[in-house]
Length: 471
Image (tube, rainbow, N blue to C red; front, side):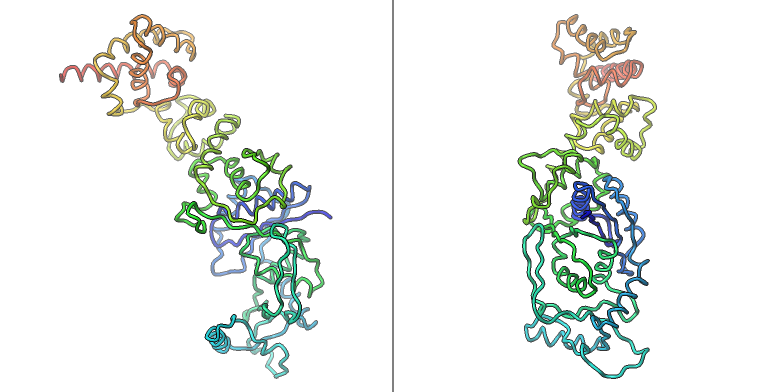
């Protein structure tokens, strides 16, 4: 049997992390077995579905490189197919027309709730032989079995059983002629030959209804696997208040797709004590049997830790392709400084996100108008004037501008003045970068460039002179 999975989001909002994890699990399960992965847009909610949300889903899937073999299919383009099957079911007696008014159904619901009964359709039209005009408004309901149970072996949760008496005759076509979500899903899974349905646990209650419809139309029932929800750090359902937003927000916040995928795959699945997984390892090792039934808690610190790892372990040239977007957001012209791949190497150890990297790299490309006040007050004092003058002279005569030669010039200055490296290095760092913190000084000074560094030292000396004049 060829494995075929699907990811079927509703385009009523962004692609959130729970949806992205479901997509990842479905994608990995298909790739692990050499099967196929289908993307389906379930846009039957015409009022809430938007093109903007569709674009957000596509952007998220593409950014995560979760490629699909078929689709995207759109349910709104398949209404003729759904209605054709519904008409066949009406002829076969597995569906029936229901003429109950909205008022009657609301009254029935209120009565049932007042009696502490589960609200459900009472089947009034199920076997009615009352005559109705052809144009009289009606819905179409599925004739659900009234005896027995639906039992399915959930690949994550084990056997699950629902009594058919708990399931009412759900509406499969509305009065306006549009088919409903639960029905469309069934026909799509059948037509697209889906073998495994991997989805969130919020769909468990839909599963017995869908299985009964599949059996009624003579379709093969797929294997189901329901993934537990993701919680926030406080144990409550993940929401915007936890910072949980669309997948692309993680891109905007400076995360690499590899870090988010690695983090998401471990939110409910494990392989021994291993924490770091390449895409290749995930694909090889992923198994539904190792997915936990328990809810998982989202931990931003863990995600940052993974992101820091990937910033420093992936090829700098590759990381630079993702950094470029953040550099553009900062409106930094990188033509006047080091290559972005070099910047990744320089700042990787210090920065947990690409956004942080882009925000802290400006001094490599642009001159600054002022020194950081605290750093200047501490390090650009009269006592720093001589070390800065000596190191300036040594840096300005370097013909082969390398980080190694920069290091030698700084060391030679300390030796000549018989002072510790800090007495030279800290004033030079503030002079060159405008701040008191930077990567290793030799590689930082080298990356900034000789002419720019010498000019900045002159600026620092002028600052010291002005400070002396005020004393």
